Structure formats: structure tokens, C-alpha cells
Image 1 (cartoon, rainbow, N blue to C red):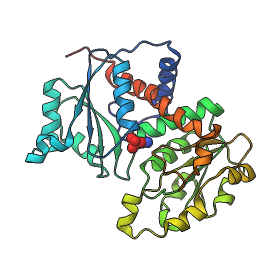
Image 2: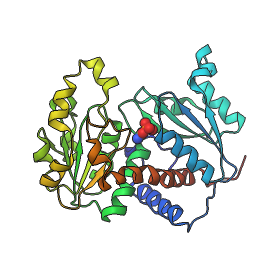
Image 3: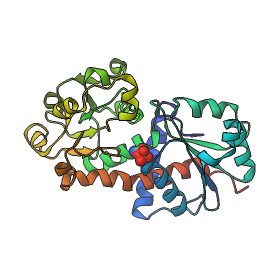
Length: 304
Ligand code: CP
């Protein structure tokens, strides 16, 4: 694995290796191989989990962290992204995590940069969020051992969700019985290529589900497209304890990448009961999965 840009550019073997290494870090049976390396966090979009989790992962691995201040950087004076990253490399940075609102920008910059700095996609536009899909996969395996033939239902704004797209790609590789639930204005056009079953009706979609992954309603993106009534969305798609009890399987796992809009896509009461704890465990697992990603990308080759 040279970089982590999206799920389709890494192999099944890489994915399983990341899961294995993350488990070793979580159980304390592995020592980091990347002490003394430097990670820069380049976040052009807001983030709590991804940014703090990569910072925590790097620090637990004995790395140095440079929090690149996108707003006050020399990019505002016209410096290109390529020149910025190349300068960071010569300052001693070994890898960058980039979050950006433009889909595909990380891959474009990667092609221009001439030096061997590692790129990690921390979420680009509506394209991909691979470290999130990897930590989601890790959490599912921890809870239900395998995703093969398990009914995994993704609910919400699939069209704008880089998390959903990365998860669909990864989970279909591992044989999950994939379903999505969304209104037509949040639909994604490529279901057929991943054998995903589409439902408009929440109750029908979550019937006998083993895992329900709820997505955040992305008001900031939908508003630009004339977002329909939020009260109507809540009425049709909000998950609460009653719906889960009545329709999903008894031991269903409730997941959400965060941040959650309480009482919009999940009721506050459901979020605060035992079932909501998995969402916090996803965030916790993210640290170990990101330690594994840093280990895979940076452990070969000595310090510069
Ligand atoms: N899941 C996720 O990407 O959360 P943040 O936007 O807080 O990083």
C-alpha cells in the first residue's frame, strides 16, 4: 500500500492486514514501527473524529504531528497545493492526511508531487473516506465476526456520503448482503454494480437487519440542491427504539460515522441507550485502525 486514497485502490489483503494490525495495537501485542516520523494534518473542512483520531494514532505511535492551519497557511497567498505539500516534505513531513470539500483533489495533487511523501485521504467531497470504512469494518468484525451474508443496511443520504460509498465498496468485497434506505433525492446511481438492494421505506429496509448504519443528513450540501422538508425526512427516516425493536433483528448493531444530528436521523433516546454506545466504540476503534494505516504506510524505510 503506497497511499490511502480510496478503497478501490487497496487490495483485499491490505484491508485484512490493516484489521489484523489494528487488533494487535488494540490488544497491546504490537509495538509501533513508526516512532520519530512526522504526520501533518491538512484539514480544509471541519472535523472532530478524523482529525483527533489521526492525531491520537500518530502520538500513540511515537510520531510528531504538525497541525497545518489551512486558513492561515500561504495557500491564502496563492501557493499551490503541490508546492505546499512538497515544502512540507522538505520540512521533514513523512505523510499528510488531507480533508477537502473537492472530490478527487487528493489524487490530483498526489500525481503532481515529485517526492515520496505519503497521502492519506481524510475525506474528499462526496468521493471517499477510506479510513472511516476501515474502522467501520473493524467494528463490525469485532461485533459479529464476519460480514459475509450479513444484512447490512445503510440509511440516509447515500448520494452525498463519501462514508457510504467507501463502505459499499469495502463491504461488497467481503460478501455482505447490502441494502440501502433513502428517499429518491438521496439515492446513488451505481447500486447495480455493487449488488446493493435499494429501499425507499425504512421499515421494509431494516427488516431483520444485522447492522444498521445511519448517515448524517448533510444539510450544508443538500441546501444547495433545494433540500426538501426536514420535518418530512424525520417523519419517514428517523430511527427510534420502537422501530428498531419492531423490525430489526434482536441483536442488531447500530452504527453512525458521526457527527449525529440528534432527533433528525436517530432519536436522542435511542442514541443514549446501550445500543448507541457502538457509535462511540467506532470512534475508539478509529484510533487503532489509523495506527495500523500509519504503520502500513510508514514502517518501511528508515528515518530521514
Ligand atoms: N466520521 C467523520 O468523518 O467525522 P468527522 O467529520 O468529525 O471527522
